[in-house]
Amino acid sequence: MPILRFDPSASVIIVDAQVTGRVTIVTRLVLDTGASLVVLPWKLALGIGISIDPEKTIQTTTATAIETVPKVVIPEISVLGKKIKNVDAIIKDFPPESPIDGLLGLSFLKHFHLKINFPKGELFLE
Image (cartoon, rainbow, N blue to C red):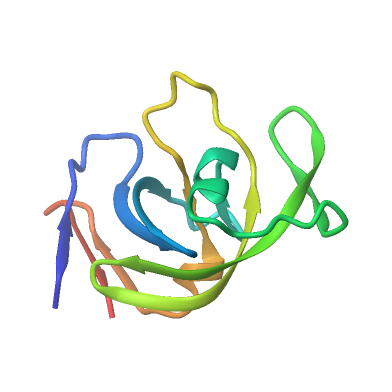
């Protein structure tokens, strides 16, 4: 079983994810069990070639506002060799200085038994 090793003293757990549409791009996502959906930036969504329908939107609540953002289906996301097809996601940019590209939310994580061993800095997806 593949294991992601992470720094337990860090404030977030960052995973490398393969996001696939017409092409595959490897990106850095924060594991976020508080996010209902996967969140990807515009550049990545357009880069993998998915269509974004301006009529398909969802309201999302941030720390400071309620925003209306596009809702899409990502053909495939793979993390630690575990693949899920047709993953619901929203498109939202992060600040340019952000070290991450998006969030790995429950629309992907709900398909797995997620185990996190913080003292050892290990994450497992089963």
